[in-house]
Amino acid sequence: MLGTRLVLGTLMIVALAGIVCADGYVSVHYPQWAGLLITLLIAVLVIFAGYELGRLMQAGDSPGGYKPVTHWAAFVSAGLVVIPWIEMRQSTTGLSAIWLTGGLLVTCLAVLGRKTTVQAIGNMASTLFIILYLGLLASFVVRVRLIWPGAAGAAILVFTILTVKSSDIGAYFVGSALGRHKLAPWVSPGKTVEGAVGALATSAAVAIGAMVLWGHYQAVVGPAPLKMAQAAIFGLLMAIFGHLGDLVESAIKRDIGQKDSARVVPAFGGLLDIIDSPLFTAPVAWWVLTNWVRH
Image 1 (cartoon, helix red, strand yellow):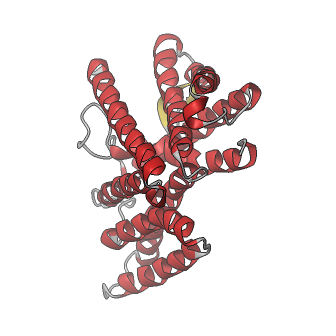
Image 2: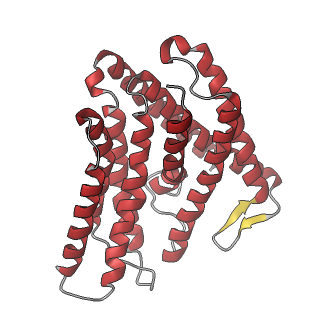
Image 3: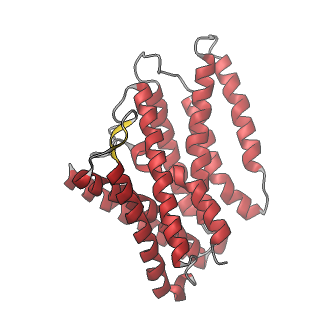
């Protein structure tokens, strides 16, 4: 299992790196399309994750089972991801609020159109949760990419994702080797305090190392965006919110009574298990980088 996770994880990182490099190339040679490749990638992932979460919510006949309007939720979520790129191109704002308002109105009407009031509130709420949890949070991944429209923007997105995922890796290995004290046994019995400390240390170290490496390639991507102390704090924040994101996804699965969100990604619990921590950290990363990055 561990070997499979490492192989698949490595392949996914390589694939992501290839797309980011392609996006950086396009940004330099065709600046009007800067960020489009990554935006489309995130939108596709959100659509698949939307259907995965919709199926998860409908699992079984337990009281925790819901019937969200999954097609609509996936569509609105993908729109929220694309909107930041459109806003950058059109130099406008406010489209996300308009899109969300339309999403709310049609959600209510779609549930009403089922001609039943059974779990109507729960079905509306679960649809909106998919839209906000996947679409709104993932839109901040695109916003991180668009902090800089050029190749530096692609690099800062890689920096953010590597920092987040390294905390997952640190938590896994340290927790497996040294974990003794449960962190939140009521929602995720496998998580330990020792693993959380490992996540903090690994994420901070990777963030600092990334800034050192960035300095060696500043001729291509510009000066390092963060000072070393800022990078360490950024890494700690990514580890904390990444851990919280993982716990939130665990709570969702426990509510439904499912161990894995899907079987589409072998050795992982599903697409949601892969993107849960980046989703939760994206708004925090965007806020920190927007206020701290050296423009």
